[in-house]
Amino acid sequence: MQLEEALRRAMSDIKVMSLDDYFLASCFSITEEGKPITEWTLLFYNPKTKKTRDCFVNDKFVTLDDEIEAQKEMTELGKELPKIHVEEAIKIAQKKYAKKTINILISLHTIEKLAWAITMIGADITATTFEIDAKTGHILKEDTTSLMKRL
Image (tube, rainbow, N blue to C red; front, side):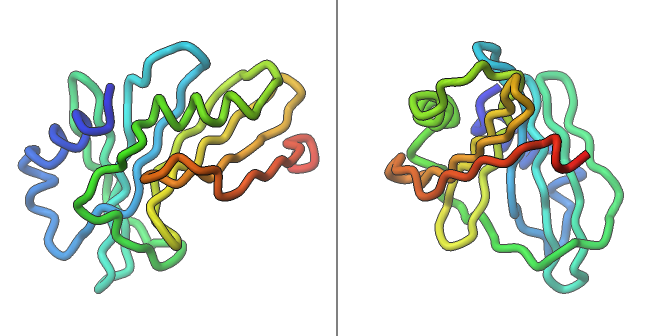
């Protein structure tokens, strides 16, 4: 499922449309190499109450979770969609990542600028995250960490 389709479906859902004082803060998905994205999680943030709501979107349903306390303040994604589509961001990361991939975690967020965070989970139990500028496709940051240390 394309992000644009998930956003269109969510924003036309009556429950999402009734979210007062919320804005879209990030988008998340998980997939496997070579497989299509089938679901997106859209995170909505209310700066007045400092609460969030997760919205799960797939080809059949739009589901809105209950309000929970936000872990931190968030920045609005804005109305402009990324020029670099998620598939292109994944390909940019894959060119730099030579290991066998188990899963790919995908996040669209704004910290200093709109960026994709593509995290490649390798068979060697490492996670390599590529922060990719969503307008230009330039890699802003690359970071690798062992997941074994975290257990």
